[in-house]
Amino acid sequence: MKDIFGKVGDFLGGLSTILVSFVSLSILVEVVFGVGVFGTNVVGNVMEIVKSLGDGGFVGLVALLILWKVFDKK
Image 1: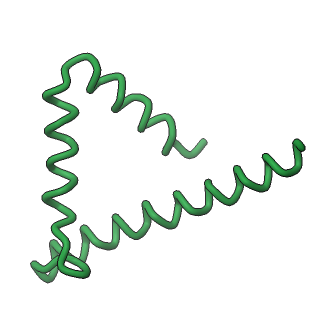
Image 2: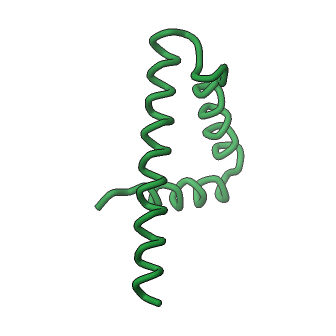
């Protein structure tokens, strides 16, 4: 059972790394070329997420800390 959870955790960790890399690449492409990947507005979406976390007050701060901890590579 421990082995299965380890494999699932490794898979999800690798998947999240790929997705974060894709978001970073999408932001870079949108900044350089002015057009988002597949017609999406990645920069606008990231700005809306940051704005909603800022409008959330303390709850937004807690959510930001949780996200930071999830994506922190140590």
